[in-house]
Length: 287
Image (cartoon, rainbow, N blue to C red; front, side, top):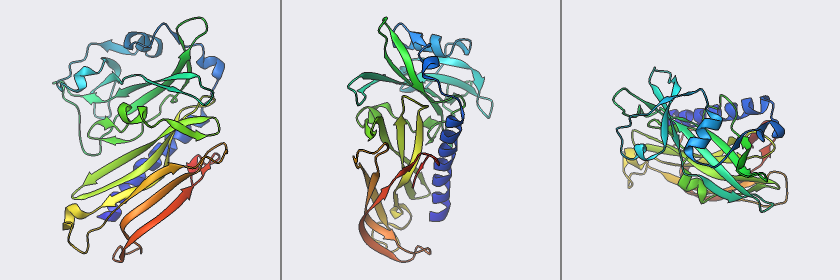
């Protein structure tokens, strides 16, 4: 079971890595980005500027929590033929390393059935489009960067994206010499086993926004065996960013807990160690 879940978790991270690599295959132009301007950062202005010709009308959402997001039905359908709705997360304001204000916009695109219910299965996720805006000297705001066309999201489950605006807002920090970003934890639980991985969200201003797999976030099997069973184990990793002045800062993962230390998974020991990962800008991954 451990190997099956790990394969599924890594498959999600690999898919995100492929999407990020595809992003850099597209041509990025700062001057072209700046041509997209909005009067304000309201849902109406954002959708008119970025999704013109792609909106159908009002969405009916049965879930009270999801209905609180500004929303509109998009002119597209999911893989299973359900309606796709654009939900706008709260705007995230932060400063880049030059002290300039930036505004991160997230448009999540989950699917809903004809009764307004979220299409939610365990392995279903929703894509999310991210945009960075800055204040324009002529008034209003202009686009700085975005996720590329066709970006397939950052993973998730139960019909939602793993992007959480509240978590991101409190964790944006320098991830490189001129790079801001956030470390995201993507988790997955099934039949008593929970696993997670760490992703690094790169809020690039000279290229497309991307999310990259960093490493193992932890595993807990106590849901299968019970906490007191000798076969049960639980460990977690805590990330920290090492500011060494490089273009991309290393990320250190500190592992603590009971962990299998052999391929069979039968040898379980208490561990307390750190692993440092470096970003490879050619392969677009942490190694």
